Image: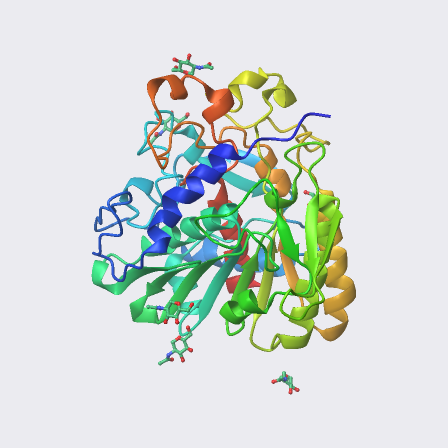
Length: 428
Ligand SMILES: *[C@@H]1O[C@H](CO)[C@@H](O)[C@H](O)[C@H]1NC(C)=O
Ligand SMILES: *[C@@H]1O[C@H](CO)[C@@H](O)[C@H](O)[C@H]1NC(C)=O
Ligand SMILES: *[C@@H]1O[C@H](CO)[C@@H](O)[C@H](O)[C@H]1NC(C)=O
Ligand SMILES: *[C@@H]1O[C@H](CO)[C@@H](O)[C@H](O)[C@H]1NC(C)=O
Ligand SMILES: *[C@@H]1O[C@H](CO)[C@@H](O)[C@H](O)[C@H]1NC(C)=O
Ligand SMILES: *[C@@H]1O[C@H](CO)[C@@H](O)[C@H](O)[C@H]1NC(C)=O
C-alpha cells in the first residue's frame, strides 16, 4: 500500500487564510492583514442567458434525476467545454483565496477550468447554475459549510459562483471572525458561511490557525461548542475526511471522554477510522435531537481525493501532480479509483445517517463527488498558489515536498460539487 500523503504544505496553507481569520475585518474594502490583501474588482461577468426551452428540459430532467440510482449525478464523464466553462472568472472574484487562485499565482495552462461534468444517461444532466436563482433560494437564509480546508475550498467556490451575479461591490461583504468566515449578499439578506471544524466534534485542532497535526485528540461527547454556530442554519454542508487519514502507518487517534473539570476524563486510543465513526455517531445524535427537520436541509460532501502519488496513473511519484494538464481518461464500463482514496468512510457515514436519522424523517443528502473528482489529477494548485511565505525557486523545483495535490484550483472541480448542491437546493 502506498504510504500516506504528507500534509505539511496543506497545513501551511491554512495559515495563509486564517492569519486573516485571527483578526477580524468587516466590509468589502477592509484590508485584512498585510499578508492577505484583497484587491476588489467589480465583476461584470455576463451570464449566458438561459434559453427558455432548454431550461424547461432541465427541470424535467431533474425531476427524473437527482438522487435515485438509475439516474445518478455521481456517475458520468468529464466533457471538454470551453464555451460554458468556467462558470466565473477567478481573476475577477473579489473573494477568492490565494491558496486556490492558481492562474493568479503562475499556473499557465487553463484547460483545467474548461471541463463540464456530464452524468450518464438521458435526462440526468445537472441543472444549469444560475447565481440569481440560488440567491433567491437563500433569501433571508443562512447556509453554513462546516468542516476542513477542502470544505472551505468549496465555500470559496460557491462564493465566487454567486458573487459574479452581484456586480455592485456595496452589496456583498465578507467577515472574518475566528473560526467563522461569513459571506453576505446584502440585497438578499443571504448568508453563506464557512465554519472551521475539521474533525466535526470538539478537538485539539479547532483553532483555525494553530492546530496540531501530529497528535490529534477528539472529544467523543463534545460537539455543542461547534453546533451552537450552525444550530440556526437553514442549510448545512458538512465534510470531514482528510483529517482521519493516517499520515504514518502507526498514526492513531486519541479520544477523550468526560472532562478534567468533572474529574472523569478518560483517554483512549484507536484507529483513525474508528475515531471517524465516533464523530459521526455524535454528530448524528446531535442532529437527531436538535435539528428542525422542517427548516434545515443537511448535506454531507463526499471524500475529496488527493493526487499525490503519480504512480497511480503511470507517472513518477516524485512529481506528485505537477504539470498534469488533463483528467485521467474515462474508461467505459469501469470507473477510475485512485488507490489512495478511501471510499469506506463515506459508506459508513451514509449507513449512520440511514439508521439514525432517516427513521426520524431527517435526510442527509450526500454530495457524492468522490469518483468524479478522482479523475481530476489536473485540478490541484501544485506549486501555483500563494503560501504563508512565498515559495522559493528551489522549492518550486521540488514538487515532492511542495506541491499541493489536495486542494483544488478555482475555477475548477469544487464548482461541480456546488452544481450538485445547487441542483438539490433549487430543483429537487
Ligand atoms: C475551444 O476549444 C476548441 C477545441 O479545442 C478550439 O478550437 C477553440 O479555439 C477554443 N475556443 C476558445 C474560445 O478558447
Ligand atoms: C435575514 O436572514 C436571517 C438568517 O440569516 C434571518 O434570521 C433574518 O430573519 C432575516 N431578516 C429578515 C428581515 O428577514
Ligand atoms: C464574532 O464571534 C463572536 C462569538 O463567536 C460573537 O460574539 C461576535 O459577535 C462575532 N462578531 C461579529 C462582528 O460578528
Ligand atoms: C413540521 O411539519 C409538519 C407537517 O407540516 C408538522 O406536522 C410538524 O408539526 C412540524 N414540526 C415542527 C417541529 O415544526
Ligand atoms: C513542469 O513544467 C515546467 C514548465 O513546462 C518544466 O520546466 C518542469 O521541468 C516540469 N516539471 C516536471 C517535474 O515535469
Ligand atoms: C458514490 O457514488 C459511487 C459511484 O460513483 C458509488 O460507488 C458509491 O457507493 C457512492 N457512495 C456513497 C457514499 O453514496
